[in-house]
Image (cartoon, rainbow, N blue to C red):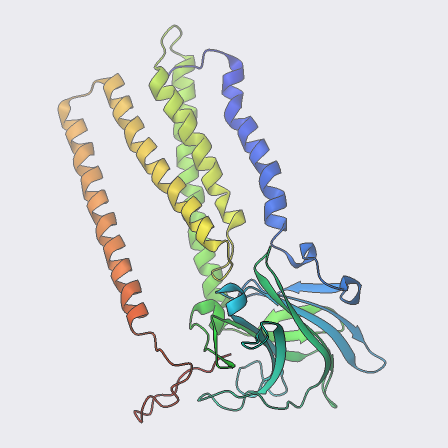
Length: 370
């Protein structure tokens, strides 16, 4: 790859990276609880980004009467047709035994309502009084952010430790005849529990999948960063070769290399922008991420052919490269087909009832709605 015709062109990728950092920083921050605008936000000076379901909790604690004003924010998978829930559990960070507030749209009035549920069974859920004293319960839907909010005041139960409360939160897709449909069994849904410290303003995850999620993130970061480092090394080598070949330019090879470096840089920053699985923007992020990934593959393969044409090696090297790319492409297509088969099979076994208890007498308990 030859040297660009002017030093300024060499700076384009670096300038692009700086501009990218400036543009992406606000977007990443916008996903945090501190940027959310709430009704009567002065009531909730403390906010926490909860470790699952892209949810957050805003609150204030009054030690004089052991009460708290809370605002729970989460994005239901189907927007305003879905439901969100936040609960305290007097005994453990678990679903069973939780004293829950569930918000959803009333089928008669269309207004959002907040109802109480004492979750005492895995087989069904019904509106019921709870042991947790609550008042000023309201809900709202933020169409701009796709989030549903639960507002309430609560009193810490007698004998409860406000510095160590068990909390559970959840989201669901729909409500049928006033009954929330059971939630997904995805990892995020199963890990939406933990402890809450109203005094210090902290929360911890109660799920066992935290370390697994961390390992998956490390795996992805290592793969992306190592591939990016190799690409940068190749790009730098090309610049060096170009600087040593005065008067010779391979414009196509050079331009594709610059484009490839720029797109790969954008792709690496996708790690900082990725919404969680149930966030309404995750679908668009997937399109962005996969689209750039395929673009990088196409540009990379094309530029290798450009390089081979420049070097003019023996035909066996080009043939070997074509065979290698064909094998890798075939494996990728096969894995993609297997993935889609698994996804479609999972969707085909989705039940059609809000709750089916013991599955027509077969003795298999269904997961509760929250």
